[in-house]
Image 1 (cartoon, rainbow, N blue to C red):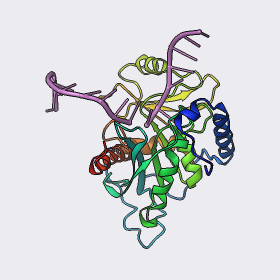
Image 2: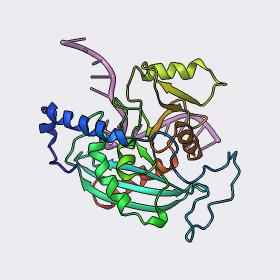
Image 3: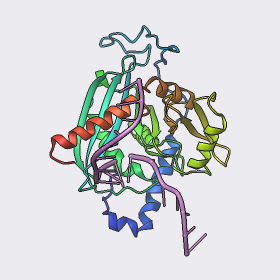
Image 4: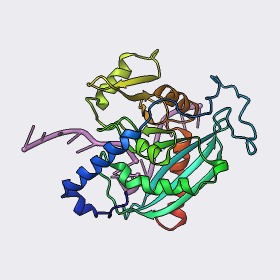
Length: 271
DNA sequence: GCGACAG
DNA sequence: ATCTTGTCGC
């Protein structure tokens, strides 16, 4: 992470660098935790009801219930793919209202390479976390990218979670084909169970390992989102939290970060 | 060789 | 990620 930043053209012809990146991923992966490792509790099963708890916590350790859910996303200039605005939002878990926002315009010198998104996006997101007051610091962070659902089981959500030592959840709008999983395969799996099917399906790769879940986040949406464990959280908790946040197909923390990072680009005359 | 490839 | 208009519907 502290090494020189290559240009896109350098990178494409330097498999050497990809090997270094792979080594970093495999090294960081040793610190990965894939079960619940946090002090707060998920809100009671809510079927349109509100819940008590996690009231004013300014003078406590907010140890009771989950209250602050973070979301992170980047939007890019249409002209210059290296110019972006990164946004971190924090939502109140019970109201889904944004209680905190930080945005930064940045120039990214690392290109997007499938399977290595973290090397492009993680540094700026870490900076945003660092600029967030502890009183509003997210207890769990949703990231626009995958976690375990990744060629080496260490996507952006894992990468960010380990570096920030924070529970993270990976949210993919499209499936990254991994371990035999294909969009068509998932579509057929969803269709196979017809209308009365569950809205969430565990994704198990050819190797037999559980990589994440496909979730129809809204009743009307045929297209699922793909969620996976990032760090310090189980898949069951991941699914529960994502469901709490789904007013629309895209979970509210990610959606708000997306909207606001776009606004940030406009404000700065980019876009 | 060909297709696939998170954001 | 971004390029793009209208359009159908609540």
